[in-house]
Amino acid sequence: LSDRLANVFSSLRSKGRLSEADIDRTAREIRIALLEADVALPVVKAFIAAIKERATGSEVAQALNPAQQVIKIVNEELIGILGGETRRLQFAKNPPTVIMLAGLQGAGKTTLAGKLGLWLRKAGHQPLLVAADLQRPNAVQQLQVVGERAGVEVYAPQPGSGVGDPIQVARDSIEHARRTMRDIVIVDTAGRLGIDEELMAQAAGIRDAVSPDETLFVVDAMIGQDAVRTAEAFRDGVGFSGVVLSKLDGDARGGAALSVRHVTGQPIMFASTGEKLEDFDVFHPDRMASRILGMGDVLTLIEQAETAFDADQQQKMAAKLTGGDEFTLEDFLEQMLAVRKLGPLGNLLGMLPGAGQLKDQLADLDEKHLDRVQAIIRGMTPAERADPKMINGSRRLRIANGSGVTVTDVNQLVDRFFEARKMMKQMGGAMGLPGMGRRKS
Ligand code: GDP
Ligand code: MG
Image (cartoon, rainbow, N blue to C red):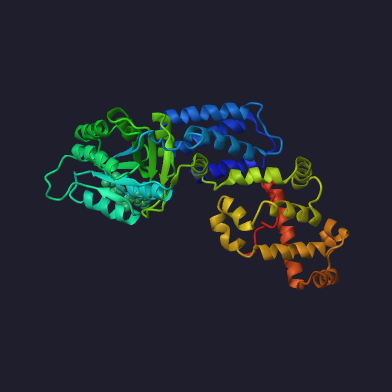
């Protein structure tokens, strides 16, 4: 998905303005991309319609170029579909708050019980985990292991007690929680590999026995299109008030998230991102949107860039970058200072799409290096900054001495500047980040 969208966006990057044909072509590509990411068709349709309307409408931020406009719109719409603000857990007025977990076998319920338990315990609660999965021989033990790691008590039938009814166990656990002053009860339930009636009946029985304040439907983000069918079955069979996406550490592109949210109307509340109990967080629609876009936190970068550059400066810069005035070292310095206002370079790089691959090349672009670049440019005369071509050998030596660096450093900067200028022209000033020029390999 990300490759496809990256292509769309890079082809828009060179345009000055969005034509209708651009919008159509982009909409088509996004449609295919979403389908490839296993997003359900009705969801895709609704999404594309919204994008087209907005891209065609008057809403066009002046400071953005077309690629950024489309990214921004797609991103905002994705966040909208994914649920906007994150919903928090609803706690019962009279404790204990009961949270029931439902989902297919292997979805990650038991693991989630531990994660949620740990997370709640750290937040100052006294949770109790309940082993209401008596289906598989090892299920109880698995929860006990998880509970121990989370430092959370597990309520389970005594071995040999003869209690084999998960509904009874669940009911008893609430009593136990009251007696022992637990304020949250997390009920782990059994799953099947596929949806079946018996499973649903048992889950519904547990639900009726414990009257959960929250029923969380746990779904493996890797199952793609199947997520819709599974979610519908659980919605109809048990009902749920929130969704937890698990295994987001895999290469799932998030199609399941989009579909489940859209089809069931229930919010995605948590995300599970690994086997360790700490690999867990509340769900962030904006991060998921970025993930689906495959572009890192590219929007954050754009937004930060928008605030750091004032509009005038940006217009002036855009004119230079798109081939009007020549981009000078003075501009380079100015832009670098603006970008440095955004924060440490490492953070910035982390937000750039594809920064992972670029890491090696950018490794030497550390803060110290930027300090040096700044010193070198400051050591130049205004004339040299305006017309870097005039910086000959003797000037380089003077600049090096004046700014406490070697001639090689000055050479590198000047070379890199020319390269960056060339690249910026090619990109039409898409991002216009100084110092990001490709290194000679
Ligand atoms: P349950 O059958 O729904 O209780 O699922 P489990 O909690 O037993 O999880 C099934 C498998 O998926 C186990 O091997 C877990 O370690 C693994 N698992 C659960 N959540 C995650 C996750 O977020 N990421 C990864 N990589 N593995 C997970
Ligand atoms: Mg389990």
